Length: 252
Ligand SMILES: [Mg+2]
Image (tube, rainbow, N blue to C red; front, top):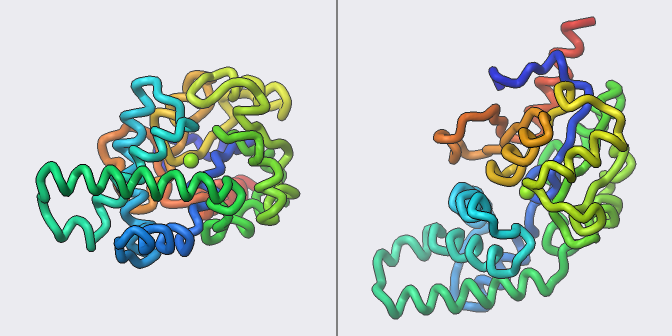
Protein backbone atom coordinates (compact mmCIF):
# COMPACT_ATOMS: atom_id res chain seq x y z
CA UNK A 1 0.00 0.00 0.00
CA UNK A 2 3.08 2.20 0.04
CA UNK A 3 2.18 4.32 -2.98
CA UNK A 4 -1.38 5.12 -1.95
CA UNK A 5 -1.54 8.36 0.10
CA UNK A 6 -3.94 6.91 2.68
CA UNK A 7 -4.23 10.15 4.66
CA UNK A 8 -5.52 11.98 1.57
CA UNK A 9 -8.35 9.58 0.77
CA UNK A 10 -11.86 10.66 1.71
CA UNK A 11 -13.81 8.78 -0.96
CA UNK A 12 -13.53 5.15 -2.03
CA UNK A 13 -14.91 3.81 -5.29
CA UNK A 14 -15.36 0.05 -5.40
CA UNK A 15 -15.62 -2.40 -8.23
CA UNK A 16 -18.29 -5.02 -7.46
CA UNK A 17 -17.27 -8.41 -8.94
CA UNK A 18 -14.29 -9.88 -7.05
CA UNK A 19 -14.01 -6.75 -4.91
CA UNK A 20 -17.25 -6.82 -2.88
CA UNK A 21 -18.89 -10.01 -4.15
CA UNK A 22 -17.52 -13.19 -5.67
CA UNK A 23 -18.97 -15.90 -7.84
CA UNK A 24 -21.19 -18.50 -6.15
CA UNK A 25 -18.54 -21.21 -5.87
CA UNK A 26 -21.08 -23.98 -5.20
CA UNK A 27 -22.85 -23.07 -8.43
CA UNK A 28 -19.55 -23.09 -10.36
CA UNK A 29 -18.58 -26.48 -8.90
CA UNK A 30 -22.02 -27.87 -9.75
CA UNK A 31 -21.74 -26.75 -13.40
CA UNK A 32 -18.17 -28.10 -13.65
CA UNK A 33 -19.27 -31.45 -12.21
CA UNK A 34 -22.06 -31.62 -14.78
CA UNK A 35 -19.33 -31.53 -17.43
CA UNK A 36 -17.13 -34.12 -15.72
CA UNK A 37 -14.73 -31.81 -13.91
CA UNK A 38 -14.23 -32.35 -10.19
CA UNK A 39 -13.27 -29.24 -8.23
CA UNK A 40 -13.46 -27.98 -4.67
CA UNK A 41 -14.72 -24.43 -4.06
CA UNK A 42 -11.28 -23.36 -2.78
CA UNK A 43 -9.67 -24.68 -5.98
CA UNK A 44 -12.11 -22.68 -8.10
CA UNK A 45 -11.49 -19.55 -6.03
CA UNK A 46 -7.71 -19.90 -6.44
CA UNK A 47 -7.80 -20.76 -10.15
CA UNK A 48 -10.17 -17.90 -11.00
CA UNK A 49 -7.99 -15.33 -9.24
CA UNK A 50 -4.91 -16.68 -10.98
CA UNK A 51 -6.59 -16.23 -14.35
CA UNK A 52 -7.23 -12.51 -13.83
CA UNK A 53 -3.90 -11.16 -15.16
CA UNK A 54 -4.50 -12.90 -18.53
CA UNK A 55 -8.04 -11.51 -18.58
CA UNK A 56 -6.64 -8.05 -17.88
CA UNK A 57 -4.23 -8.36 -20.80
CA UNK A 58 -7.15 -9.29 -23.08
CA UNK A 59 -9.18 -6.30 -21.85
CA UNK A 60 -6.17 -4.02 -22.37
CA UNK A 61 -6.53 -4.77 -26.07
CA UNK A 62 -10.01 -3.22 -26.04
CA UNK A 63 -12.30 -6.20 -25.43
CA UNK A 64 -15.38 -5.45 -23.31
CA UNK A 65 -15.53 -7.15 -19.93
CA UNK A 66 -19.26 -7.67 -20.56
CA UNK A 67 -18.91 -9.76 -23.74
CA UNK A 68 -19.81 -13.42 -23.28
CA UNK A 69 -16.70 -14.40 -25.24
CA UNK A 70 -14.60 -12.55 -22.65
CA UNK A 71 -16.20 -14.61 -19.91
CA UNK A 72 -15.64 -17.83 -21.87
CA UNK A 73 -11.94 -16.91 -22.21
CA UNK A 74 -11.65 -16.29 -18.47
CA UNK A 75 -13.53 -19.45 -17.46
CA UNK A 76 -11.36 -21.53 -19.84
CA UNK A 77 -8.17 -20.25 -18.24
CA UNK A 78 -9.56 -20.85 -14.76
CA UNK A 79 -10.63 -24.40 -15.61
CA UNK A 80 -7.22 -25.16 -17.15
CA UNK A 81 -5.58 -24.12 -13.86
CA UNK A 82 -7.75 -26.38 -11.67
CA UNK A 83 -5.61 -29.09 -10.02
CA UNK A 84 -7.74 -31.91 -11.47
CA UNK A 85 -7.33 -30.51 -15.00
CA UNK A 86 -3.73 -29.27 -14.79
CA UNK A 87 -2.68 -32.73 -13.52
CA UNK A 88 -3.69 -34.24 -16.88
CA UNK A 89 -0.84 -32.30 -18.52
CA UNK A 90 -0.65 -31.44 -22.22
CA UNK A 91 -3.37 -33.36 -23.93
CA UNK A 92 -2.91 -32.19 -27.50
CA UNK A 93 -5.50 -30.76 -29.89
CA UNK A 94 -8.32 -33.13 -28.88
CA UNK A 95 -7.96 -32.21 -25.20
CA UNK A 96 -7.80 -28.50 -26.09
CA UNK A 97 -10.97 -28.77 -28.14
CA UNK A 98 -12.70 -30.61 -25.29
CA UNK A 99 -11.63 -27.89 -22.84
CA UNK A 100 -12.93 -25.24 -25.26
CA UNK A 101 -16.27 -27.03 -25.42
CA UNK A 102 -16.58 -27.38 -21.64
CA UNK A 103 -15.51 -23.79 -20.98
CA UNK A 104 -18.05 -22.49 -23.49
CA UNK A 105 -20.84 -24.54 -21.93
CA UNK A 106 -19.95 -23.72 -18.32
CA UNK A 107 -19.51 -19.99 -19.01
CA UNK A 108 -22.87 -19.77 -20.76
CA UNK A 109 -24.62 -21.78 -18.03
CA UNK A 110 -23.16 -19.46 -15.37
CA UNK A 111 -24.20 -16.34 -17.31
CA UNK A 112 -27.66 -17.83 -17.84
CA UNK A 113 -28.01 -18.27 -14.06
CA UNK A 114 -28.12 -14.46 -13.95
CA UNK A 115 -25.77 -11.84 -12.54
CA UNK A 116 -27.60 -11.68 -9.21
CA UNK A 117 -27.28 -15.45 -8.62
CA UNK A 118 -23.75 -15.82 -9.99
CA UNK A 119 -22.30 -12.88 -8.04
CA UNK A 120 -24.14 -13.46 -4.77
CA UNK A 121 -21.22 -14.41 -2.48
CA UNK A 122 -20.29 -11.43 -0.27
CA UNK A 123 -16.53 -11.58 0.22
CA UNK A 124 -15.18 -12.04 3.77
CA UNK A 125 -15.17 -8.89 5.91
CA UNK A 126 -16.87 -6.70 3.30
CA UNK A 127 -20.03 -5.75 5.26
CA UNK A 128 -17.95 -4.88 8.33
CA UNK A 129 -15.45 -2.90 6.20
CA UNK A 130 -18.14 -0.87 4.45
CA UNK A 131 -19.98 -0.25 7.72
CA UNK A 132 -16.81 1.05 9.39
CA UNK A 133 -15.80 3.24 6.45
CA UNK A 134 -19.33 4.64 6.17
CA UNK A 135 -19.41 5.37 9.90
CA UNK A 136 -16.01 7.11 9.62
CA UNK A 137 -17.39 9.45 6.95
CA UNK A 138 -15.60 7.95 3.95
CA UNK A 139 -17.76 8.45 0.86
CA UNK A 140 -18.44 5.11 -0.82
CA UNK A 141 -19.63 4.30 -4.33
CA UNK A 142 -19.69 1.21 -6.50
CA UNK A 143 -18.29 1.74 -10.02
CA UNK A 144 -19.02 -1.46 -11.92
CA UNK A 145 -19.08 -2.79 -15.46
CA UNK A 146 -22.38 -4.58 -15.35
CA UNK A 147 -25.68 -5.19 -17.08
CA UNK A 148 -27.94 -2.74 -15.29
CA UNK A 149 -28.54 -5.05 -12.32
CA UNK A 150 -25.74 -4.07 -9.96
CA UNK A 151 -27.70 -1.64 -7.77
CA UNK A 152 -30.41 -4.25 -7.12
CA UNK A 153 -27.65 -6.82 -6.62
CA UNK A 154 -26.00 -4.68 -3.94
CA UNK A 155 -29.37 -4.32 -2.20
CA UNK A 156 -30.01 -8.07 -2.42
CA UNK A 157 -26.77 -8.90 -0.60
CA UNK A 158 -27.31 -6.19 2.03
CA UNK A 159 -24.57 -3.75 0.95
CA UNK A 160 -26.55 -0.98 -0.78
CA UNK A 161 -27.26 1.04 2.37
CA UNK A 162 -23.54 1.58 3.02
CA UNK A 163 -23.08 3.17 -0.41
CA UNK A 164 -23.62 6.81 -1.34
CA UNK A 165 -24.20 5.85 -4.98
CA UNK A 166 -23.93 2.99 -7.46
CA UNK A 167 -22.64 3.50 -11.00
CA UNK A 168 -23.45 0.68 -13.44
CA UNK A 169 -21.82 0.94 -16.87
CA UNK A 170 -25.06 -0.06 -18.60
CA UNK A 171 -26.87 2.79 -16.85
CA UNK A 172 -24.12 5.43 -17.07
CA UNK A 173 -23.32 4.62 -20.70
CA UNK A 174 -19.55 4.22 -20.28
CA UNK A 175 -17.62 1.10 -19.33
CA UNK A 176 -14.37 0.99 -17.36
CA UNK A 177 -11.60 1.74 -18.36
CA UNK A 178 -13.37 4.72 -19.98
CA UNK A 179 -12.52 7.58 -17.62
CA UNK A 180 -15.99 9.07 -18.11
CA UNK A 181 -17.63 6.55 -15.76
CA UNK A 182 -15.21 7.75 -13.07
CA UNK A 183 -15.69 11.46 -13.83
CA UNK A 184 -19.47 10.94 -13.66
CA UNK A 185 -19.03 9.28 -10.26
CA UNK A 186 -16.72 12.04 -9.00
CA UNK A 187 -19.22 14.71 -10.04
CA UNK A 188 -22.17 13.03 -8.35
CA UNK A 189 -20.31 12.10 -5.17
CA UNK A 190 -18.72 15.55 -5.04
CA UNK A 191 -15.13 14.49 -4.40
CA UNK A 192 -11.80 15.42 -5.94
CA UNK A 193 -9.96 12.75 -7.95
CA UNK A 194 -6.75 13.19 -5.93
CA UNK A 195 -8.68 12.44 -2.74
CA UNK A 196 -10.41 9.40 -4.19
CA UNK A 197 -9.22 5.80 -4.56
CA UNK A 198 -10.81 3.11 -6.71
CA UNK A 199 -10.40 -0.53 -5.75
CA UNK A 200 -10.86 -3.32 -8.28
CA UNK A 201 -9.53 -6.70 -9.39
CA UNK A 202 -8.53 -6.05 -13.02
CA UNK A 203 -5.55 -3.80 -13.73
CA UNK A 204 -6.52 -2.86 -17.30
CA UNK A 205 -10.05 -1.93 -16.28
CA UNK A 206 -9.91 -0.73 -12.70
CA UNK A 207 -6.44 0.73 -12.21
CA UNK A 208 -5.94 2.10 -15.73
CA UNK A 209 -9.50 3.44 -15.82
CA UNK A 210 -9.22 5.17 -12.46
CA UNK A 211 -5.90 6.74 -13.36
CA UNK A 212 -7.44 8.12 -16.54
CA UNK A 213 -9.71 10.23 -14.34
CA UNK A 214 -6.90 11.16 -11.90
CA UNK A 215 -8.22 8.74 -9.27
CA UNK A 216 -5.80 6.52 -7.31
CA UNK A 217 -6.18 2.97 -8.65
CA UNK A 218 -5.70 0.09 -6.21
CA UNK A 219 -5.68 -3.59 -7.18
CA UNK A 220 -7.32 -6.40 -5.19
CA UNK A 221 -4.75 -9.19 -5.32
CA UNK A 222 -5.65 -11.92 -2.80
CA UNK A 223 -3.00 -14.46 -3.87
CA UNK A 224 -0.11 -12.26 -5.03
CA UNK A 225 -0.76 -12.94 -8.72
CA UNK A 226 0.10 -9.43 -10.00
CA UNK A 227 3.72 -8.85 -9.08
CA UNK A 228 4.51 -7.30 -12.47
CA UNK A 229 2.01 -4.46 -12.33
CA UNK A 230 3.21 -1.26 -10.68
CA UNK A 231 0.31 -0.04 -8.58
CA UNK A 232 -0.84 -0.17 -4.98
CA UNK A 233 -2.18 -3.62 -4.13
CA UNK A 234 -4.22 -5.03 -1.27
CA UNK A 235 -5.39 -8.55 -0.49
CA UNK A 236 -9.00 -7.50 0.08
CA UNK A 237 -11.48 -4.70 0.58
CA UNK A 238 -11.31 -5.48 4.29
CA UNK A 239 -7.52 -5.00 4.34
CA UNK A 240 -7.69 -1.65 2.51
CA UNK A 241 -10.47 -0.50 4.84
CA UNK A 242 -8.34 -1.33 7.88
CA UNK A 243 -5.41 0.67 6.45
CA UNK A 244 -7.63 3.66 5.70
CA UNK A 245 -9.29 3.57 9.11
CA UNK A 246 -5.98 3.11 10.95
CA UNK A 247 -4.59 6.18 9.16
CA UNK A 248 -7.68 8.25 9.98
CA UNK A 249 -7.54 7.08 13.59
CA UNK A 250 -3.86 8.00 13.91
CA UNK A 251 -4.50 11.47 12.44
CA UNK A 252 -7.04 12.33 15.14
MG1 LIG B 1 -14.21 -6.99 -10.85
